[in-house]
Length: 97
Image 1: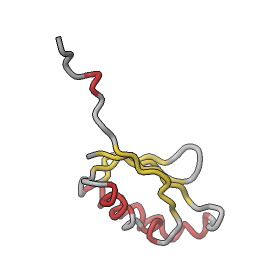
Image 2: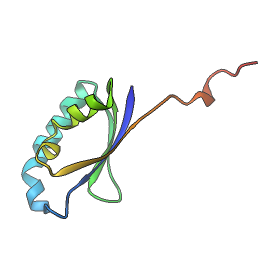
Image 3: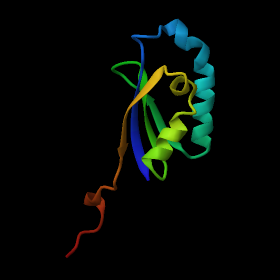
């Protein structure tokens, strides 16, 4: 099952300097989750610090468990604000006649 997640940097508590030491480890862990097939696509948010991910998992609990392995999430610096389960769009499928 696929999910869209939104996260945001907790910039009111942490400065760019606070985030800096974790960014390489964050990228390495995101790369590992991509190679494991969990992350399908990842974008930086254009409105604020954070990310939007398209992920593959069996459940929302599994999504939360995997996201918790990211250093910024694990250190309380990145808040997951939404996890939305996705369903296939039927409009492109065959039409019943």
